[in-house]
Image 1 (cartoon, one colour):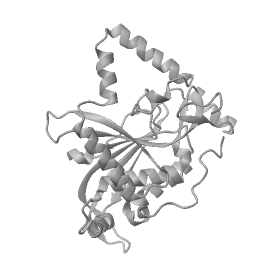
Image 2 (cartoon, rainbow, N blue to C red):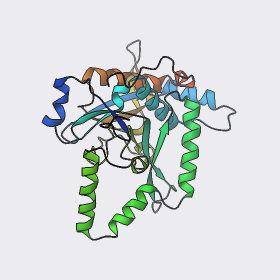
Image 3 (cartoon, one colour):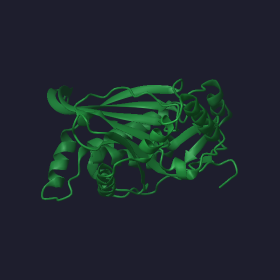
Length: 288
């Protein structure tokens, strides 16, 4: 690891001077956020899931498809797996996706964040197995890393919380946060996925958190039926789903993000491609 690298990222030294100026002009993550929304047509996806799950013990869900599509997008478009820290650009070392897990489907049930590291060569089946195993383990546990840290911090006086948070931001700025901490904190991730459809809500635009370095938040809305225009320019009522992105615009160009978003949508609408391992993955560190 180079002396200017971080535990979770490799410093990008070949970024153009124009892009290197962005973290000095657009300083905060909230200021750098751009928002976009897309509507996904689910007919082909749901039909494929019904055929694939027929007689299958370990069911593949729509959420598994979304996570696998996100992993594949980050593997094929590694410029989306970058982040800004300390006014510098870094290529993330791994593909990490965080999301919220509810321990029970009741109003009084607690929620916690779950962060998983996926192999770039993951298939839909491996993503589904890894996700379900982690969810079941988390639902059985009484607390998580994020909950433990929050409980410890909030047991101290307010001024101490401010001091500790300030110290954490300084360490993060200089890339000195311990790898053991970064591995567990769900805000230090490639992406954060919020599945609002699981609680029957539509997609919203998620705020970017100043803590951590997740470069985009993905919100998945509920399934619903709406009129759509098919290939024959006929209006049909189909099942659709809205998704929104909140993205740090500094990490890549709008053209590259549009290409990655189109890939992501295509993978969800045609999930059979996720059953095979990707071939000829680009080198994520080619820009170093």
